Each structure stands twice: as C-alpha cells, then as structure tokens.
Length: 487
Image (spheres, rainbow, N blue to C red):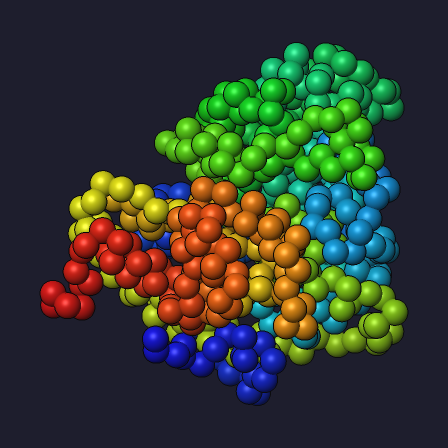
C-alpha cells in the first residue's frame, strides 16, 4: 500500500514556522461538505469536530470545567464520580475558575494545533452557571479570537441567555433533549430548579420541555446552529426518540445525536443502581437507521468528559492539569496556522479519494452491505494498530455508498507487546455484528481469534484513506473490478 503524504500526526509534533492558513449521505450534517449546504453554514461547521463528521478526523475540541452548578437532576447523572481514564459527560478531574480556564486554553492551543473549538459542557449546566460561562468566553475570545465557542446545556435556563450568546458570536449550542412527552420526562428527570423553586414529577418535566422548545426556536431564529443530544434508555424513551426527532427537526435543529445510556453501577447513578441497562451497539444503530430521513443524525459522538482535550476519541486532559501549566502563558499561532495548511491539502486529497471510493462501491451493484471497523488515530486514515486501539470507527458500505455509522469503545488489550486474553475477549464482544476489521497492524493471534468469531481482520490497507480501503474490500468481496482497472 502506498504511504501517506506528509502525515498529520507528524505535523502536530514538528511544524515549521508560521505560514498562511489554508483552509460529506447527502445533506447529513455529520458528513457535511461544501457542495451540499449554504456556504455560510459550511464555514461554521467545516472545522467543528462535533458538527461535521469530516472535520472530526482533523480537528480537536477542548472543554473547560467552569460551570459546576446544575438546575436539574437526571437519573443517568452523578457528577461526583470521576475516573481519569473514563469518557463520560459530566465527569471532570479539576474544576476551573474563568482565569484558570483561560490559562489552560492558551497552553493547550500552543501544544495542540488541531484545536478549533472551545466548549463549556458543565460539569453542571453552562447556562445556569452563566456568569462563569460568560466570563470565560469573553476572556478567551480576546486571547484567541479565531477559536470557535460552543456550549452544552439542558435548556432550562437557555432562553434567558440567547441574546448574550448572539452578542458573543457563539455559533453552536448543544441541548440535551430526552423527551417531548412530560409523562416520559418524569421517568428521566426527577426534579428541576426553576425561578427559585424546586419542581418534581410531571410538572418538572413539562416546564423543562417548554423551555427546551422555546430555546431551540430562539436559537434557530437567530441562525445559531443547534445539536440535540438524546440519551437512548431502553424501555423508557427508545421508541419515543422517534417523536423527539420529529419535534427538533420541525424547530430547526441542525443535528440530532442519539447517545447510548451509560449506567455502570459503580458510577452511582439512579439508573446504574436500579439495574437499568444501556442499549447494545446494534440496538443503537437500529434506532439511528430508523431515524434516517428525519433530522440530520450525528453518528460520530464520543460522549466526551466535561474537561476533554484533543481529537474526538482521545482525551489528553491529563497532560494539561493546572500544576503542569506555567502561570504566564502567551498564545503562539504559528503551529495552528501551519497545521491548517497541511489539513487543507489532505482534505483535498481525501475528497477525491472518497468520491472515487463511493463510485466503486455503487458500481459493485451487489445490493449487500458490510459493517467495517476501522482503527484510526485521525486524519481519515487507517493508522492505528489493532492491539493499541481504544475504539473502532464503524463504517457501512452499501449500494448507497460509504458512511460512518458509529464507533465502539474498547479496552486497549496490548500493552508493552503483551495481550491479555480476557481483554481481547472484551474487544471481540464489542465488535458484534462487524464483518471486517481494518487496522495498520494486527498480530496472528488476534487475527485468528477474530476469524473464530466470524470477523476478518487485516492490515493490508495500513495508512490508506479509510474510504479507499473500504471500497477496495467491498469490490473484492462482491466481485466488482476497482475503478482504476477499468479506466
């Protein structure tokens, strides 16, 4: 296989002095490209890893934990629990003041040139703890004006701050909406605190619903892009999320992100302690598939911590704790600018490769589909070893083309060259329903165990563009000739 061009990975480590900055399903926002949406919208999403599936291969986000106060209780949330190795919303290792947050953002921006978005996602609610949110954004905007600003909120206090969000040029707001029926909402949110009063049960859920819809409508009217997060809770709201999708689409939501419930007992949440299970990977995919044709779907969410740093799928937060950051930091844009130039070239190459790959899959005319797991460290390439992977990106190749349909988190099983059988068994379980695994390198033992589980693992396409490799595999699987052979 041909090696990649100047690698994005190397560019994040050794970037030359400052250069001028350079700058994909049909209209799905998570796979957006400039030819399927208005140019103004594309400018907002093209470097945002959460709002564009294409961008998430190249750009990083950072969350600063400056908003600890919250005004609702959710049965899936316990913000007192923290494990530094766990990715879960609401979890943080250290809370920050606005002043500390600015210092940390500058330190990260100087060392992570992929950084394009600063988000505030708690660990409480960014709109309820508004003074800290506003102070943080104001100071960061002065230091790094080209950094996109983004908040995540439950929506209860959102309508009170839409005007401020517009004034601060916040282009992206995520609202967690799990229901549009208060009867169902009461099973998810036991209480809210609104206008100096605590509400419970259906009354609480009704107020929350009304405020969420109002906030969404206000943001849409002002041209602010919205992403709706919904937690899929089997037996509670899984079927109801079809109705939620209709409501948020009608009110202008840009993306709808269906996330699986995380309910490990050790987290101490109500659902975890009462045995409420989360959905299986294939159950989540089945629901997402049913929603195709409704509001645009986000399929690449990683359910990030409230102090996450780095590309989606990785978290470098422990590299940037306050005790590791100098008291005096100054932003240097040179690495950032050079990285953007490399990304612009790589994006152009990948766009051509992706177009050719899509045509190859469609030309196969098989009428069949494949689910393919990809080990990747970013850049849209197959560049991670099987034993080093902490997640696999899941792609579906079918007569409609090639699309990212999700990801599967796994425990890295190979440490120091040695694999643990129990961990590998967990990886195999996480790959349920997968036909083929593509990675940069895989040993004979895991390859054999994959084969025993009915999964084919291969490193024949290491460092290729993901879509190029998938199209070649698909064509070989179903007897089609590669495009290059017919040209």
